[in-house]
Figure 1 (tube, rainbow, N blue to C red):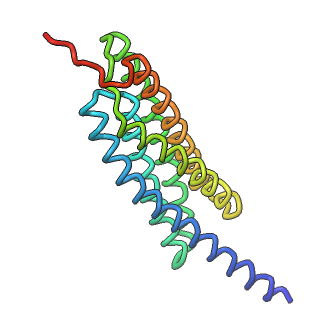
Figure 2: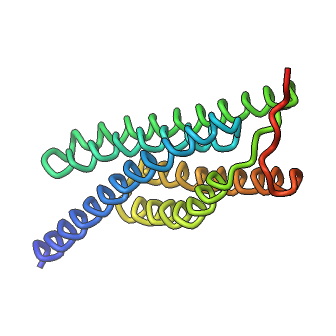
Figure 3: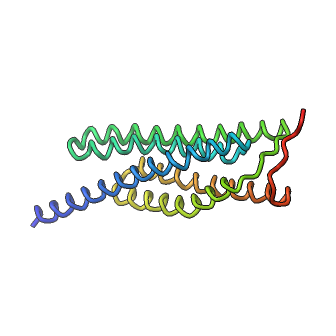
Length: 191
């Protein structure tokens, strides 16, 4: 009887590892497309919020790459997977710190410089779509992490939820810019 429950637990674990892999792959693809787009739009419009969102997407993708290695390794070598779990946890913590540091630095710089980014309807749409996708993705990661016993995937879920918060902040900032300019692009100052 013990072997039946062990076999069921092993099948459930493999299923959860598969779910962790799928969530990580989706994160990499999503952040690759959305992050690159946010970076281009953020740099061309001067939007700190979009640039910060892009940096967060890049770092979240890097954490997901480490998680892909970790989950793939578990299939052949669970002991090595534990080592990769620790490495993934470290990467997620570093990613969170870098995102916070970057956004804080850029916010202070924007205040000191008196910068006013252009509004971007494209950025608005990107943030709105992200606000629909990222909370669900982050919660799915957290739920899977809890069942799998993976603090690294749980931390990556927090990083994804932080990206959802950045999407919300971006949306509010872009709405405020649109409102203050009457819906048109903010004129660039002439020097």
